[in-house]
Image 1 (cartoon, rainbow, N blue to C red):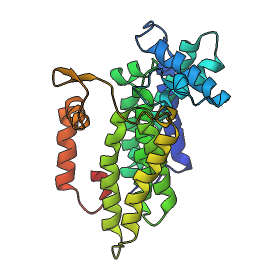
Image 2 (cartoon, helix red, strand yellow):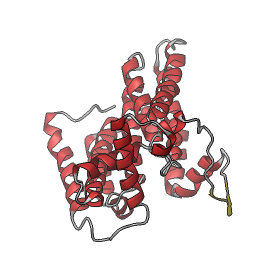
Image 3 (cartoon, rainbow, N blue to C red):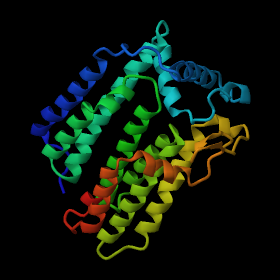
Image 4 (cartoon, one colour):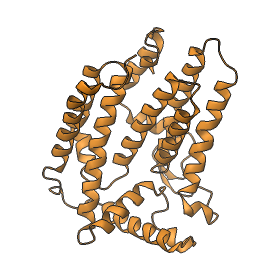
Length: 290
């Protein structure tokens, strides 16, 4: 399995980052204001101001509480740094996060396969129209992509060195931040569990101590990060009372909502390719199938 790029490989990696960033900043504000952007910008600023005042009361955190706050923290900080045009500042932050996602994908592809594969994957993501559109507005998709990709990169590094608890801690922390953007990102735990299982199978001889500890660290750390970053929960709001359309009915979605959401929004080709990898992967490189 390939490691991260050596010094001579970084120019191509940085080129992907710069191309991705330039393509997102170009004509950044041409689309006009989208529906959710003022909410994310305004609520984000109020969240940051509440934290600054150490105001943990219910009223300070009621705005847009249907989604966890991590993305709104980012847009809130951006808005406070550019108070004359908070939406524009938030869009610049979104573009930066989108470009960083392309960089992380290059590193992930390099780690799993090789540098040309990683660079190609990063370039595809850099110019994918739907992704670029999301990276030009204040939304939850861009920080979700960034943190999920970062989580997977950390988890792959952890699976390569299963006795190093620090990498599992990092994966758990990033997973908690990803779920702190959007609850749908709970799905990141599917590959995390698979990678944790792979690290167990790769241990010679298999260690019954390493694996349970890793499986404990992931939900424990991510849960602490999620709860610790979401003061709305601290005011006693532990039930998900948001109503959404699910299978044609407007209602509080069941737990199965996330699995159905995943299957409905993931391209069929990606699902088939993932299934094929899972059925045909060889021991070397074993992690590539994940």
